[in-house]
Image 1: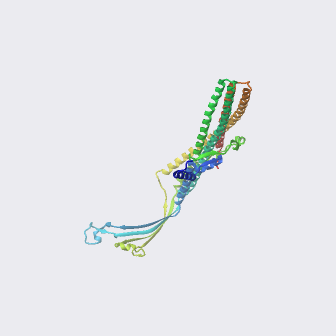
Image 2: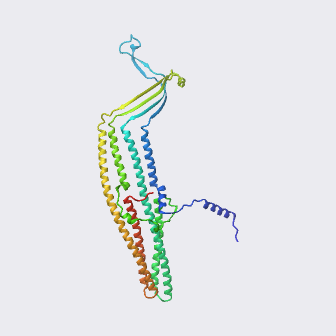
Length: 454
């Protein structure tokens, strides 16, 4: 028996520790768990969350304009060349001729200023309208966030149904594979014993080869649909995911939903349009409020200095060097004429409100048409699903009876192959109808505005 070399043992140990340290990302999730994961990880919802946070900060930014504005100032200047003033020479020398001027430097080599400025808005009509508009804008951001959740819920639900149907189809194809595999073995034995011709065996092998290809395609379809589901959820592609729901686990109230009446308010698009209309009305009100006067209060306190010796600039407590000053005042601003600027802005606002009103009417007609179309589509798909389910059961019965006849020697191999093809086609039609019905149900719920997003 060969002995392990030391380096081989160390390699095995390092490999074991490496595998032990790797984080496993295997998920087995229900539809609701997939939706919960998507709400937390989908990039569109993350962006919508950031937009909500941004709108909240923007509201705070606008509100801050109404709070006291306080600024501290501190300045020290060195006058390298003092500014000159020109005075009549007779101010200094009365005997100087008329019209003669002399240069006189005013100021000190060093000047300083230390102070505090406070301003407070007292009345500004535009500001108060803007505060309401900023909160409405925050509400619009919240509704956009809801719309993102609805869109993600729709995409994840459809992707989940795709995985579910493809897995059901794979299970059926696998069952068919086993059934044809048994049929090939049985036919091969019968052919060896001279009960059937080689042609019959070859026909059966052709069908078996076809089902092998279909099984491989079904496996690929399952993997592709899982990749799509992970993408819609915002899950990394190197993670492994399995679904836990069965078709029987899904709760549908189709009969009740088909009788439901739609409500425009239930559609987030309609609610967003209403908020946009409110914002347009507030913008017009804001432009009108700019015709009103504004009133502001201001207060300043400080000390200024002018010295020839820089060392004296540090004597802040010396009022001979740093004399104090104070100032308080009110500023009233009355708009008189702006070149018709505000009037043109208000005219644009009125046009925008009319446009939004026409958009509302168009959206109402669109919702009405969409709900009716989705209701009819769902009803048609449900009828087709029932029909294809019945056809699948009938095709299974025909196949079983044909196979029994063949085994008893009163039927032909060709009849079995034809019955098998019909059975597989009926199964394929059933799963297509099932997927179409599930997707139609999601579309119908979204049209009604009842698609669950929690």
